[in-house]
Image (cartoon, rainbow, N blue to C red; front, side, top):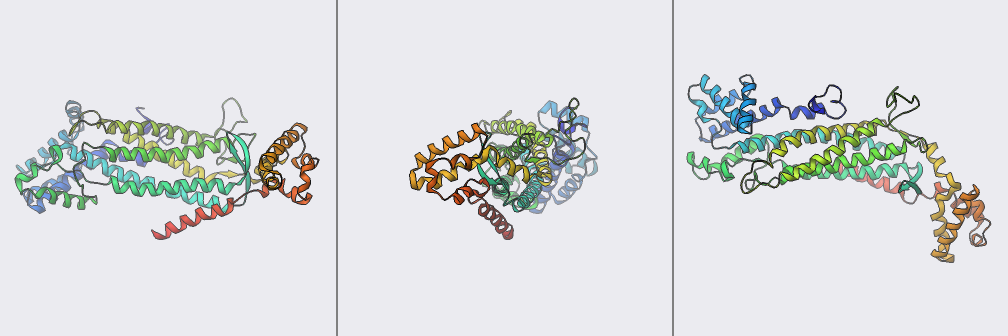
Amino acid sequence: MTSVQDSLIFGNIYSHPPAAKIWSDTTRTQYFLDLEGALARVQGRLGVIPEDAANAISEACTSLAFIDWDELRLQTELVGFPVLPLVKQLAKHVSEKHAGLGEWVHWGAMSQDITDTAIILQLRDTLRIVEELLTAIRGGLAQLCAKYKTTPMAARSNLSPTIPMTAGFKFARLLATFNRHETRLEELRKRLLVLQLGGASGNLTALAFNGGPEIGYRCQEALAKELDLQIPDIAWHAERDRIADFGFFMTSLTSTCAKFAQDVALEMQSEVAEMSEPFTKHRGGSSAMPHRRNPITASAILATATSVRHMGGALSESMLSTHEHDSGPCEVEWIALPHISALGCACLRHTRELVEGIKIDPTTMLRNLNANGGAYASETIMMALAPKMGRQRAHDLMYDVCHEAMQKGTSLFDVLSTKPESSIIPQEDLKTLCDPSTYLGMSESMVDAVLSHMETNVSKV
């Protein structure tokens, strides 16, 4: 094993094979050939290179069969990047079949053009997988929101219960976050999916020798259309913000997955036991403790998200290219992007599985909410008393009442009923106020708002 991506044991846990395949040597090399073939076809139509050369090059680029992989590896180690050695093999192969026509391969381009545009195509395919997984996560969360919209549970701050909310409200906050990520994804595509074709220094100089000063722009336009990419306003080979932007997006997206996973893992603790991962016999088992059921899906999400955050930061380094090109910073992308893509999609896949299979225990949620004698209703009682006796006095009273109830192991209502100040509220009203499940605020309507917003956006697509 050289990485989790090619591990027989860990490959399906800490990688996502469809995403990893996009960044394999064979797929990357085919992207290079696809670009060389598309460039040749465009230049043949525009008269930049002979049409018979364009046809020969385009045909040769449809297969990897001619490639000497050992030679490509050795020459890449010598040169430092794979495009030049690949171009040499391609040119030789074309000329062997069509005498001399291989000399028109890679006309007016530089290796960085092919490398960068191939990366953009790889990222486009990766984002299709991301979108598919993100859509499934959002759909699953929408179902949870609707199902548990009215299910009361305790909100928690600093790991301690605070006041009541509904389980649907908790899921709706998560859904709203993933909805924002969906918007970020669309915005990212607009910035990211842009052609790079400029030749050395990026100003299209070489293409002008065989077609005039405007032919470079026409090549850009035609090639962008061929590849279904946007036309660049200017060369961006030395400005790597587009690539770093992908890292920022994946970092933010997987961090949201990790926050969800962390919450579920905490909810799975036996002393809480309000939520749990999907159950399969022996899933999350322990070799030493037969009773254990470990949150292995949450652990996988947390591990992959952590790795993406670190790799995402590495992409920021690629932005430090000097002048019009630099060796070093850009090569970080070759290391980081495959890992971010495979790890990030694995994180999303685990999140989808957790969302779709999560187990909710409303009975335990209600029991936990009523623990401590209903002390979690202290805020609502304080706010009911405040208009009649002042907020600070009401706060101090409820502080003492909660403390006394917990010390005596009795209910909030029993202690509060003995206090003279409680007489300003009718007993029946006081009893209702002491029931935490009646103090849910606008939880339900907020769930409806998130679901409505999501439905509205879907209908616009």
